[in-house]
Amino acid sequence: MVKGVSAMLKPNLNADLKPGVGAAGFCLGDSYVEIINAVGVVQWIEPGANLRNIISANKVWVGVKKRIGRSDEVIITLTYMDDVVFLAFGKNMILYQIVVGEGYIGAFNGIRIGDDLRALENNFEIDFNDADDEFLILKGTDYICGISFDTSYRSSLINAPLQQIRHISIHDWDLA
Image (cartoon, rainbow, N blue to C red; front, top):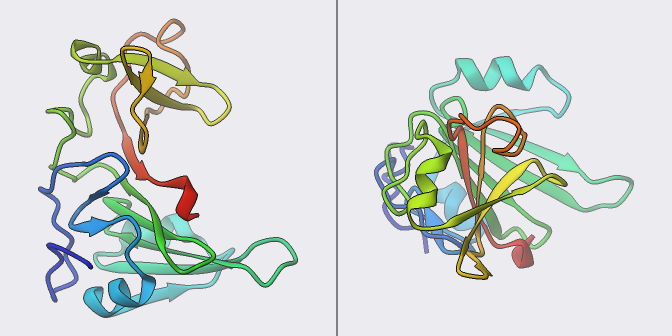
């Protein structure tokens, strides 16, 4: 069930980020139908349109439906206010990823968008995943599942030690 989302189309930008669980008042595993009914009006954009310009100028939700390859499978995304919140729904029309960006106030373990990535080192080990250009975190020898961080560098801390967090992804790839 969608939690913390008002009828005025605004997600909860103060909500804590919970790896593998949720963010912005949404929970991974929520259905597309529940969420679309909660957020109300969505400006739908055709794939291939100048999406970046449309999203950056929009102050509400923007939706995109994309067909994957030649199959009948469709991925739906909803983006709120210039990538402050991005929601992705997989083949079963289930929310599997929430990405937050600049303008999001909530935190994970005290870490927010715009913070130095190395602030995570106070409680975690940081690992750069060069296959997806993202940072993962470990507690001891175990990865913290359901969360990743990206910066504008898309390079390890060895190559670029000063990096600010631009986006945080909360996800459950099993739902994709």
